[in-house]
Length: 183
Ligand code: SF4
Image 1: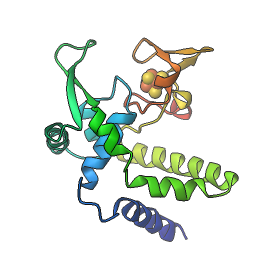
Image 2: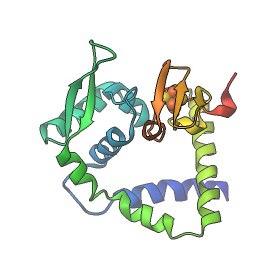
Image 3: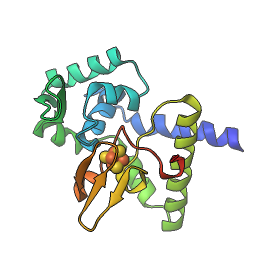
């Protein structure tokens, strides 16, 4: 049963990405999606390499190719003059409207609400456990992070010592620490 489920998850991921489109590779789609969803602490090639479980060199090449296509651009990082932040261009956002994962999102949103919730919780727990086992960071959002102290319209991040706005709190973060792993 567990082995079947593990095989199914891998099969589903492959199926979701394989639409026959040849405009971008699966890695380029993953990068475009990541930079559209990541917060200001995470929009770097090295954070993307952690997210995509790949080397920094490979991640940099993927980013470079998307910059050359005009889908990503580099911007100065006001928090760290030695690094640049990666932003999705308007052309990149236009491309994301044709994201191959759209089919999977539609299929999942057609499931009954209780199944959607259970699936989401199960996948989040499995992702956290596997990341812990492999000793790699796991990505998540502020609402589930032990560094977050929530206010009414804003929140305070104890890790980055920054105030967070509501929209930022829904973004992926490389500094995320699951609340149940807090020491
Ligand atoms: S509260 Fe957690 S998820 Fe949110 S910005 Fe801080 S470290 Fe990242």
